Image (tube, rainbow, N blue to C red; front, side, top):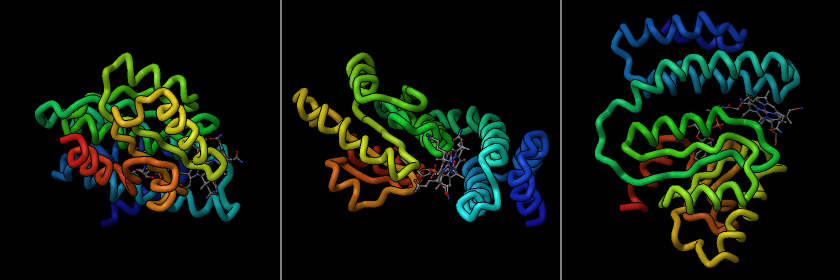
Length: 210
Ligand code: B1M
């Protein structure tokens, strides 16, 4: 309703305090964290993305919006993790080399934790070696990679090819995601699945790890 529209506007304007307030109000009204994430925050970010693309918003404004979004997500993180779901396995996740977008990846991390996976989040700008070292160290079953730029998404194939060269590709379920990707790209680079959003990532991980 009205508050959700207000939150889209506040996100657009990068108003962190207002976003936190809106999240708390919707939680008090009984909204689930997931509904709040998708309808109030992710949908609001879509508007920011469209105006960024069209040259109406610029990097400084988009950074403010991203920070407001993150402060809202920080309130929801513990609530999503609190579900008491049985332990499902370990996922190493990170944004690929050359790419600093992390909101989508953070969302996937939160939802995977909520579904009972242990998540090792490597942050942004990860080289193949960083993923591979973490997969081995954490004895992980799942590799998740995120890319938001058409120029960085090919790096996912570099990571998968490196795993193949090491002879360890088949030890892992490799999931990829990010706005510029699609199913065909996922197949072409040798991933196990392309995940359209965080909910799909959770469902896919559950199916493929079981
Ligand atoms: Co950037 N940026 N940006 N940006 N930015 C995009 C991606 C862009 C599409 C904007 C546009 O033109 N419309 C465009 C890319 C164009 C292209 O490649 N074809 C773009 C550009 C060009 C750039 C710069 C080059 C701009 C510049 O400097 N001139 C620069 C690059 C920096 C770099 O990485 N080297 C840049 C910088 C930035 C900011 C720093 C300002 C900021 C990032 C802040 C941050 O992340 N901390 C930013 C933002 C915020 C965006 C947009 C507006 C929003 C991205 C976002 O957070 N969306 C974005 C526009 C867009 O995507 N339409 C844009 C919300 C998030 C929840 O969605 O990340 O798609 P998303 O994640 C989804 C799914 O994709 C999926 O699940 C998530 C939720 O359900 N998913 C996964 C994502 N990762 C997954 C991993 C998985 C599974 C699912 O693993 C298993």
